[in-house]
Amino acid sequence: AERNPGETEFLQAVTEVVASVWPFIENHPKYVRYGVLERMVEPERTIIFRVPWVDDHGQVRVNRGYRVQHSLALGPYKGGLRFHPSVNLSVLKFLAFEQTFKNALTMLPMGGAKGGSDFDPKGKSPFEIMRFCQAFITELYRHIGANTDIPAGDIGVGSREIGYMVGMMKKLGNRADCVFTGKGLSHGGSLIRPQATGYGTVYFVEEMLARKGASLDGLRVSVSGSGNVAQYAIEKAMELGAKVVTVSDSSGTVIDDEGFTPDKLAELMDIKNEHYGRVSEYAERIGARFVPGVRPWSVPVDVALPCATQNEIDHDDAQLLIRNGVICVAEGANMPSSLEAARAFEEAGVLYAPGKASNAGGVATSGLEMSQNAARLCWSAEEVDLRLHQIMKGIHAACVEHGMHKAGNLSYLDGANVAGFVRVADSMLAQGVV
Ligand code: NDP
Image (cartoon, rainbow, N blue to C red; front, side, top):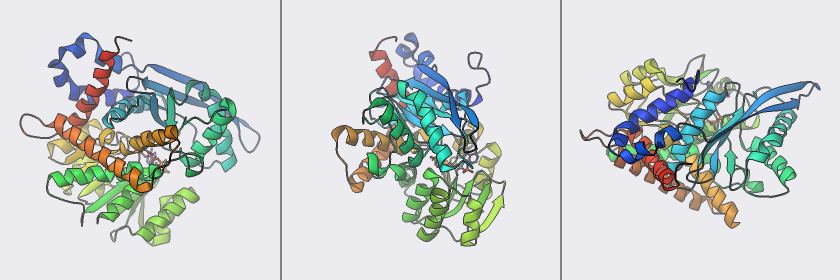
C-alpha cells in the first residue's frame, strides 16, 4: 500500500491474488527465494502520455493516455485499451495485473498489459472519436508492435475505434503487422472475436453446472451491462435455453420477466452498436420496465452474469443475490465483485467464477486472431468457436485442479489464481532475475 498510494483497485486485485497463492507459495520456497511475487506485483513498464486533439468546435482538448506493460514473461504484452472517464493508473494497473494471470490461463503465448485514456466517448461525434484515436496512436505507436505489445478493445473501444487506430498505426509504421486484435473482418479480424468473451463466459458456466449435473436450460439469468460482453453472453445463454431477464447500463436496469428473444437482442444491438444509445430506449422499444439508477442484483435469478465494470457487486448486492437463491455467478467483466462479495459467494456455496477465468475467452480468441494473421489465414467461425470452447474447458479444468481444497470444497477463485501464478512464475524462474 505504501508503494502504491491511493491505488485502491490495484491493491484490491493484488490482495485477492496474494490471499489465494500465499498458502501455495509457502509450500514452494523457490518462488520466495527468487522474489517472484515481489516482481509480479510491479509492472515491467508504465507509459503515461498527453493526448491533445481538436473537437468539432475547433477547441483543443487534452486527455491522458496510458499503457501498463505488466509482463513479457509468456509472450508479447497483450491486453485491451479502455476509454472511459473513470480510467486512472490504479484501474489500469489492476487490469494489467489480472490480464497477466488470465492470459496465462489460456495456455497461449501472451504476456499481460492494459491501457487506455480518461477520454469519454459519450456524446462525441464520429469525427471526434476518429481524431482522438489518431492522436492517441501518434504517441502509443512507438511502444507497441506485433512482437512487443498488441492492444485490443475494452470499455469504450470497439471495432470502430480499433479500425481508426490500426489505420494510423499503418500510416506511421508503413507496415501491416498484427498490432491490434479485435479488428473488423475487412482488415484482418477474426470471426467469433466479437462473440468470444460473452460466449466464453457462458461456456464456463456450462462447465460449472455440468460438474453438478445441471444445465442452463430453463434457468433465470440476470446480465448487467449492455455492451460487447453482455450482448453475446445474452445470445449464448438464450441459445442454451436460459431466460435472460435483465440488461443494464450506467443509467439503470431493464427488467423483462418474459425474457430475451433473438428479436429483442437484435433491437438492443441496433440501439447500442449502431446508434450508441441507452438501455432506457431499448426498454421503450420493447415495452419492458426500466428502473433508473439501480443495478440488476435485486432481481431473483439462478445465474448472475456481471458484464459491465469493476466493483458493480458489493457485499450487500451479493447477500441479496444469495438470499434470492442464486446458484452461480460468472464474471464477464473484470473484477465486478468486490473482495467481500466474492468471499460471500464462496462461503454460501455459490458456484463463483472470477473474471480472469470466465472472461478469458476474449483474449484467447485474440490470440487466435494473432495466429491467423501470422499464418496469413482465416479460419471458419466453426473452427474458431471450437477452439474457444476447448480453451474454456481447459481453463475450467485448471481451476478445478488447482482450486480443490483438502476439505473437499472447490474454490474457482483460488484455482484460477494459483493456476495462473504457477505458469507465469515458472516462466519467470526459467528466465532469471530480470
Ligand atoms: P462496452 O463498452 O462494450 O460495454 C460496457 C458496458 O458496461 C456498457 O453497458 C456500459 O454502460 C457499462 N458500464 C461501463 N462502465 C460502467 C460504470 N462505471 N457503471 C455502470 N455501467 C458501466 O465494454 P465491454 O463489454 O467490452 O466490457 C465490459 C466488461 O468486460 C469490462 O469490465 C471489460 O474489462 C470486460 N472484458 C471485456 C472483454 C472484451 O473482449 N470486450 C474481454 C474481457 C473482459 P454505459 O454505456 O452507460 O457506460
